[in-house]
Amino acid sequence: SNAAASIKDAQTLLGFKLRIAAPQGYRPSADVLDFGGDAVKVVDDPQEAVAGADCVLTDVWASMGDEDQKQQRQRDLAAYQVDARLMAKAAPEAIFMHCLPAHRGEEVTAEVIDSPASAVWREAENRLHTQKALLEMLIR
Image (cartoon, rainbow, N blue to C red; front, side, top):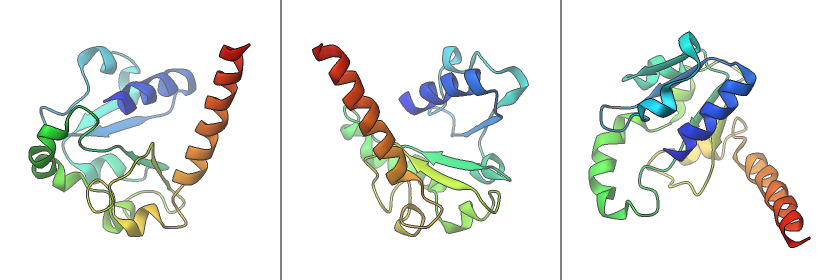
């Protein structure tokens, strides 16, 4: 996904450990994963991926252009939903992130996205300022 590609760039710059949970057929491509060495791990089990994590991030299951696959993706990815039980496996002060728009009840539950651990709205605000700066630069 585009989220995995963006996180790849951040991991390369910042050097954090990255664990990606995804079933076969939904994993990032080899060129996205060809970075980070031992700092990057792809697993099947979402609980293994979030164990002790400082940040838990998810993305929509069916992006624009994938709407015709929505029902299949919901079945395939149901075990990867970020809910309170999954967040409890992360570090005590872990934050939750999502690049929006989120589909409550699909990839994330309302109790997680609306929780104090959610950094979703700060993340969106930061993106807004970045996009405004880009527009200003392009207009000039």
